[in-house]
View 1: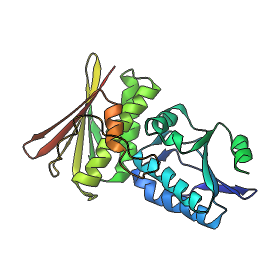
View 2 (view 1 turned 60 degrees about the horizontal axis):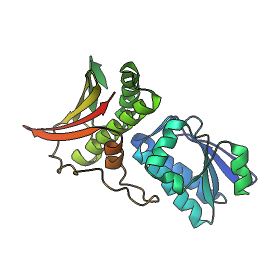
View 3 (view 1 turned 90 degrees about the horizontal axis):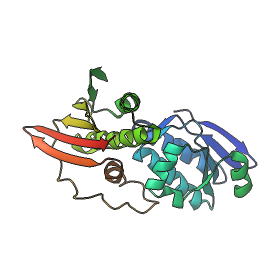
View 4 (view 1 turned 30 degrees about the horizontal axis):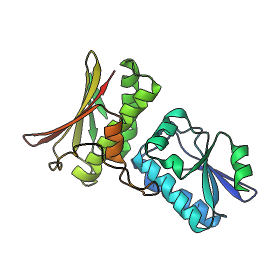
Length: 111
Length: 135
């Protein structure tokens, strides 16, 4: 799985795929953890293209957060659609992640 | 994944589940479920199939899972059949969520919260799990 990744002012920004499901979860988890390991620990996950996540995909988000916080960083989520947001609210992940409508707001908060 | 009419047949392979998800989304739309309700039912079914692959077949590919889409006047049901090990009894009600930072344990909560009825029966050598959502 190739994740679109760029870095801005020490903050890694990763665009997640259209679907984040069990089939690709372990690959995505490893890719994001590698980015966190090589970076500052400050990460923005962009869900603009993401229309479906299952519980394995949620686990990727959680493991990313744990890896980032080990480096005193954090993971912010942006561009979350209504359906994925409903899943995050059902599973209470919205209580552990900061969620922003756009990248600029997330960048300001992470700096 | 093969499908004939309202039967969907897939292998116990995680790589097949995204195709199932796409097909279910279409079926939900055709049944008149709005985007959110369709997403919720699809999510519940995907979690059930993931459980089947991960637990019933212990991650082993090469086993058939059959889904039947049943449209009724006021509901939609998805019947999931497999010939794996019998499932443990269903929880009586929606299981508690794990802590928000836990990496697993959300599947049954999603299934219960986003469907209106969950039933399980062992019929011969088959597990039959049925998820129903009111329209």
